[in-house]
Length: 250
Ligand code: DBV
Image (cartoon, rainbow, N blue to C red; front, side, top):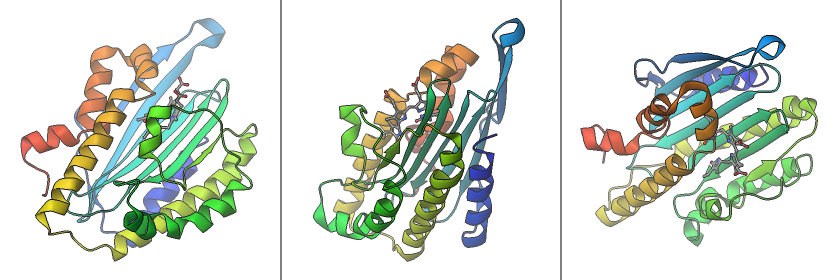
């Protein structure tokens, strides 16, 4: 329930600015439920998937896990088409029994390229700074994930649910707006060398996310290994599959 307003907002805001087309969700993955726990602790865990595409955005997808007050997850990622140099939009909004964990970023294709930073990171730093004062740095996160985050990575672990409903929601809206501004302005890349670099960067990101998906353990416990691996490679992080099918613009 906590993240439903985020999802509703994102879809209606994107609808107001983009020509959204449906993105196919493989059969059996639109909605999946499992009952876990016994007696008083019994809980139904429902995971729903949402997918869209536009001319510039290859896949806009969300996975929404709802399992009562102490298990709510919204993982929302936008993967641009391979002929644009746009960053990825990534939101990982996670509520577990231990508390909330929020990751919000525009993840760069080329982290250490100063021209790229000037284009896609500098403009969001003021937004980052305005929210960071309410959403302090969340501490440890995997060192190997660092290359994939921008300097505007909002990473925080709020104690209070009300902080998620207010400050995190505002940050989410601002990041999404800034991202759609980038999308609006961006022009297709045609230089073959540049296109090859973009493809390599997209694959690097994708392989990392699929391999290290922090939700893998949770999904396996609820829905089993086979369903989980198919969900990860066939929907959540599907670029390699789609490239193999020859359905990716290049
Ligand atoms: N994370 C996903 C997908 C999820 C998901 C597809 C559909 O990439 C949920 C669900 N993230 C999820 C869950 C947890 C996290 C944690 C359930 C909690 C795992 C647990 O504690 O059991 C950002 N997400 C995290 C963590 C980080 C991120 C850093 C903490 C992991 C840790 O401490 O080990 N988002 C995550 C990440 C990238 C990103 C690593 C990399 C580019 O964009």
